Length: 368
Image (cartoon, rainbow, N blue to C red; front, side):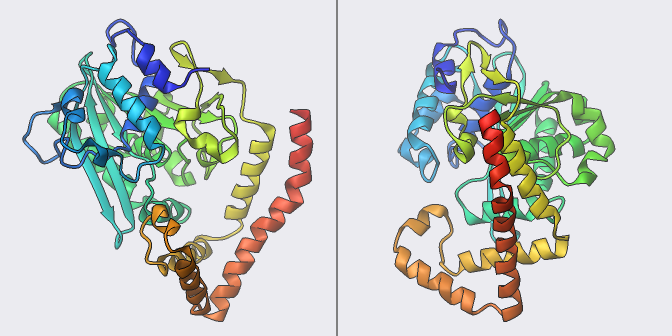
């Protein structure tokens, strides 16, 4: 069965002859993970947009794939994109990439100018940095997080620079930012948004769905999840969603390259698996059993331990792991007794819930 690389390679239709769809959105959202620093003009630059051919012709193109998950597949996708009749006339502009450890912010976005005269604004999902993952965890007790506010500011700024119809989206946290930005941007910008795509993006705290902006844009939100979605089912979600078949298992289905394509669209199935529904219920039950103050204490303590390794990305942890393990043990000893006890009790409570429910999950898998 085909994935989005095959889709890009084989799709010979222009956007004028076949309208923009959810698979197109996933393709552009995935390319937003590449490192376009110094290649694509920034939001404050007066430089003209660059063609995709100019992007791949840069000196040392390998830097675009540094610390990017699925580097091989991303190379294949970019090569296919450059040679595709559907995508090869795309221009790229307004690239932003911000990592701020102090503010606990990881934000990146890029704008694609499409051949039909519309623009797609893609928000990057969580990268390999611990700052990015910390911000994701912060969503459990902070609304909005810094990247969500940046997303709104970026959307408004891009809308001021171009006058065409807008489509926005992203994968993972990028999908969450896309929806949040559409809800909270200026009304005049909302009126220009045709579609909002969230590909396995987590949900929101309740107050987001109670805002006037949500009711204005909710019918334009297109949310897609793999059949065993974990990330996309986190927190509260009221958006309708479609379920895509994946050729991988459980959490690995979050990888967009595993999502299957049928012709010009995803291969859809009726619903996410019963076991995934049950597991997500367990996770949300665990999160909701703590108030914001306790959630914050748990998250901050957990990342305090990780920071003791002096690693800044998950890739850093693969080197000198013994030294980093000792650093983690030292950091845990340095935590006061009450906090350490709370940390272990909180982790234990998740395992207790999981063990309690594991028999039910197995029963559901048998009947699925």
